[in-house]
Image (tube, rainbow, N blue to C red; front, top):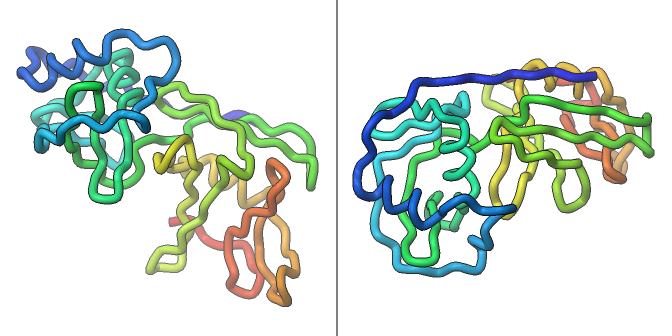
Length: 204
């Protein structure tokens, strides 16, 4: 069972000083840099934004080169106060409209308690659902549900609507602590999707 969503925005063109410094400091890392261990001086905000649809913008222009997006994503961290891009020598704040990543592809193996779910994000991280990388379902004011997957640290990926339909279909009613809920098994954990009497929810 596989669903894929991708986007390929335009190139931002010439970059400013902060943009260039981040590129130079990040380099071309093999694996994820240890950003959780870095605590450089905070240097203010940079005009960079991750839109709700997963598109990265710099100075209002979409960043079209996927490798640039992946590079910046590798040095992204969520602190209590803000999202920051971190290098060993500086950190700068950026705006994130919803979640920094999108979960755009899903692979399913097994059923019930033995089910495994793996997701690929729009920046090509592959994450298997587990106690350390759970699914989270947020109920919206209109009663719909938005699903998120923990990628690393406090960085989450919004699961796309198409994949959410698949998750809903895999769900079931279950009695948990005396309450009938609706959820699904994955990675050894029962993830509660909705508590409204155990009914399958709508999608936000």
